[in-house]
Amino acid sequence: MRRSVFTAGLGAAFLLGLGALGAGQTSFVASAQQKLETTEVKIDNFTFGPAALTVPVGTIVTWINKDDIPHTVVSTDDSKTLKSKVLDTDEKFSFTFSKAGTYPYFCSIHPKMTGKVIVQ
Amino acid sequence: MHPFDIKTVLLAKHAQHVVLIHFPIALFIIGVLFDFLGQWKKQRLLAAAAYYNLLVAAIATLPVVVTGILAWQWELEGQKLKGILLMHLVMGCASSVLICMVWFIHMRTRRNKEDVLPGYRLPIEALAVVIVALTGHLGGFLSGVNGPG
Image (cartoon, each protein chain N blue to C red):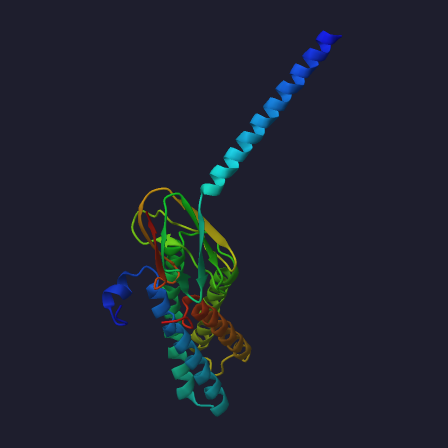
């Protein structure tokens, strides 16, 4: 009887330990996700705002179209790093900048609309 | 950018459509105006002016349609259109068909050496003017003529 109580106690302790480990991993993942920075660029009245954005490596930049007409976000250079679909009103496009550098872009429907993201 | 920079105009992959579109719009609307005036005043000269305006308008729609479709394929890489862009494409094609149809009605009458143009052309012309105006309005909206700068 005493032996079975002891075994049950050990089992319970093991399960509790596993649970705590799992919770620890979850919180570790959550904190890793929190470390990813996110920034928003608003497209409004035929302009990207801010037109020039400086962000650290790993930042997720989201463009949101607040204009009444469609726009795109496309790299100016030939790399075509950025290439969104046509964004209608309130549609979004996100990109994670994993390398340092300067990323100039424009709206391919309205080429006078330009912007750049500087990743440091 | 200089507004009369020829290199920019010729090399910008979608700029030609925006430039060329003004020719068929202007020629067609003036052609219809001459036709209505010719009908009202019973003047052959106005009817002839209408015919030549409509002829050149119909010819001018071809490069406009081609450059519009190329702009879609080049700048938007042929992606599926929706909203205003789709409406502009559909109405643009409808406008081109109507302009060519109106010219064809005039051409057929002249070819058959008939003196009187068919009366049903007038509502078709009026409808075509409305569709062309709406398409142009959407195009202006898309090109951002009301935007800053």
